[in-house]
Image 1: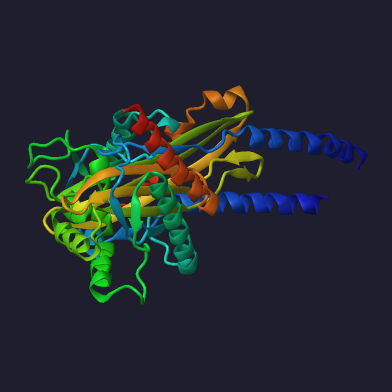
Image 2: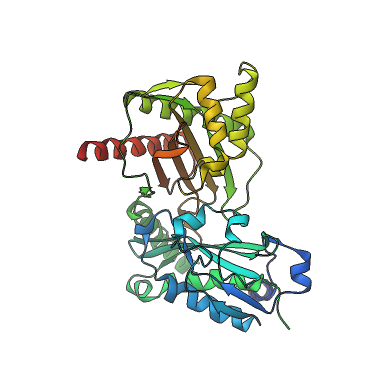
Length: 198
Length: 227
């Protein structure tokens, strides 16, 4: 019986250690240029968060409060100086919408932002959906981000994270801010995959 | 030993009932239509439409990158999607020409134009993008086929998990989804004159794709009638 308990405890300890390791190791981004890793820029311009959700009725999200602000904080703690842009397009006098930005490729995205900026960071909220179940709720958040080099009109970094989980626990789960926690986890994962500034 | 058995005897049915309740009461995934600059316009009628080959993009939901596998499956999905759209266009009073595919039977010059349009599919399919780059190709297509409009269809499949129960009894929100986008482009003006975008939180089965197409044209006909 004691031997059985010891094996169970050892298994649990191993599992805990592995999860801690996984949390510490930075994830590889979907795409990154070697030069960007070697010498990441000091300053980047963060464009307003793009609402790329196909189903906007699935959940209420305040892109500024729930996404842009936490992202700015995490990027600053990663060592980047971030200038938050208040609009997408500066060169043309036209106001662009999120739907127009979603359909753009790197060459078109490079025309956005202040003309004197070199690196643009664009964050796309692709999905936020919440469903209620009998004893809890489920949440799915899908966020991607890119860094565009305006000078060369190409991506230098691209990453994406999906957080999909559920909770069971009656009223207690209803009170837990699962949506902002899931958005926070996605943002953390994205920022951790950016090269760290020293 | 006796205590453990009695615990199991009570817990297993309770857990089973809870999980069953959770799954059955999980709200069914919705099919939604997205608005675009031309989404409120009714389906035009009494015009001829040339079907461009349907474009199927399969991507991994976790990376956003294209998945190269399932080539044969994609071809069959594209054919299924094409025929579902053709049925709806014909029911709407449009004359449909073209097979919606490029193969050995496609005449040389037409095949070349279709291949070039396929290469610029991202631009052609978007109502927001400037079509000046593709306009000469549209004019050539009109000259070769005599069609008034071209029908551009995109099927975007995000491969991920489906909604289900994970240990220790949580219901997980699925991450797989399907998006069907169809547009009618005027071959003379090089502009989108009609378009719909339908999104479903279901895995990409033939039934899901058919449901998206039906929803796309149902919303179009109801808007057409209300205008």
